[in-house]
Image 1 (tube, rainbow, N blue to C red):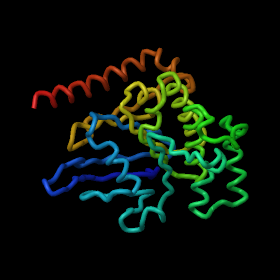
Image 2: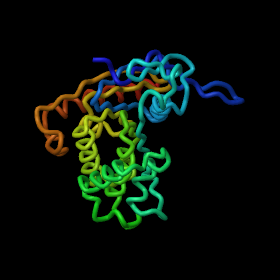
Image 3: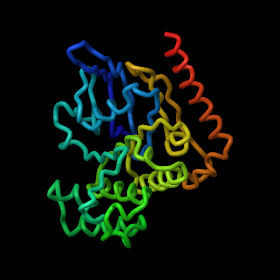
Length: 265
């Protein structure tokens, strides 16, 4: 089956008056339909830069991005795939109700049809936010706000979800529960997702596959498929398995070796 996303030999550098700062070097990987991919790596290695290139916010200096076999540079991002982007903060507008916030993307895309309104209301019911649809964001907990941000993202029917550390602002317990819930929602709807995270436990618990990036300029240092025999809905059950510990230890070893190499240079 053709991958929904394919990156081939992607390189990128930032430029200013003081010179060039290489960020990415020769990055290549595919993402299959319905796959949940996590990307981890040292702080500042270029993870968010890579996500920006996938989203079409930056153009690679070298290499090609393909969506469903079509080169984005040739046909344009909007003609190829719909991208949903969740950032570290929920960016809900306080002067709008939760319902008004989650339909914002539909308004901006001029697609606020009766069918899409019904779909948004269904999402609010499914994710236990319907009773709060007329509340303001400040009246919701952090976890509920993140669910609202996900509904806003899902409302535009994206083919691909990009998650840039969307749980990092939550406390540990809320983060564990909300991340598991959102991953379950993504899987139930067969969406394809790419998660950027610093949290190895989160990567192992949520993802079908983990990519480890090296220090800048980042290249792919390790690729690890993740598979558990139990349901992914219970994050604590996952973390109590022997498989989880093996995956976590291997990723920790790869990243620790990377940090040791950085300190020795």
